[in-house]
Amino acid sequence: MIKKPLSRQLTAIGLLAILNPVSQVEGEPSRLFEPAEQDAKGRFVNLDEEHSKASIRVTAPFFMRRVASSFFSHAGAPKRIANDGAYLRENATHSDPTATWIGHATLLVQMEHVTFLTDPIWSNTPSPVPFAGPSRHVKPGLAIKDLPPIDFVVISHNHYDHLDVPTLRKLAKRNPETIFFVPLGNGKLLRDNGIEQVQEMDWGDSINYKTATIHCLPTQHWSKRSLTDTRKALWSSWAITGSERRFFFAGDTAYYSGFKQIGEKMGPFDLVAVPIGAYNPTAMMKASHMNPEEAVQAALDLQAENAVAVHFGTFNLSDEPLAEPPLRFKAAAENTVLADKRSWVMDIGETRKF
Image (cartoon, rainbow, N blue to C red; front, top):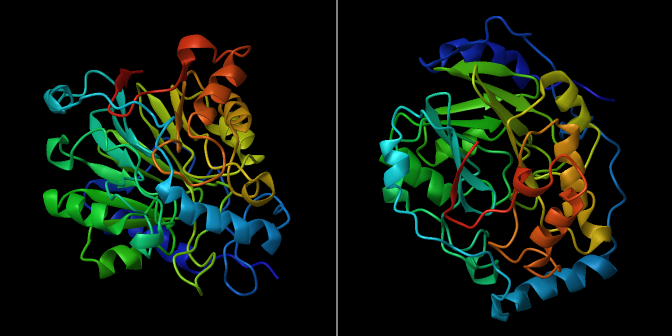
């Protein structure tokens, strides 16, 4: 039996009441997507049918390889360029819409007179057991102390490489006014860690923040931070839109039908951020990650003017060579409208206008 999450009934009320800068959307449809559904056990489910699970014969050797990978060379990791943040701090009026790749799925975006971060992680090892987790191959592209003031953060799901509590605590301490937008069921984790400015959202929720509108949207993934909490918290993608620019962050996701739906209902987007790494072995990864060719197709479905590749090279999360994802991404985009300058493979620390 499928049921709608009870917590969404509270979300609509909370959109008006919790945070002063946040208000309901005016002049736009109140809901473009249905709220996320839950199964009979109260666990969230994806829009598309799930792919079959990989067998223990696939998963056990994979995790052994991940432990061993900490001793591997960093060859093929993305290049890092110097960025002291001066331009971004000076861009106080945000007259130039920009995106800066910090590393992994973390982007610093300036548009519509706001500055925000996607899935911020500055930690070296995203894991509940750091000694056994993947280590960062490339330092973050910008130090936290050099960031411009952050208006808000969007978080796609609760996996350790996307919801990094140490980083979030530092950002909240640095600026108590920063708001953290999370999918349903993730707020308690942040509040338990002393972060109070938290707004939970369901798929289809849209709220205003200053001059931008923040949309919580579907994606095809899952959630888990412990042995017993699989799919108890929601996962999402995000769109931030305004009168001048439209930006989409896919989070972490498999390729699925929702990209086309989002493109048809909300596109075109000036810039979309799509994950292109962590796709091998296919039998294990296809259910929750895209390969580079699927990432290009997702960007086309989203009606993207430009697509930036993320979620590769920073951490060694899977079996493909570190250098492979961006090469395949550019090759896949070559014969599409995203060819050349519209398919972005950035250096860590690089800032581009869009």
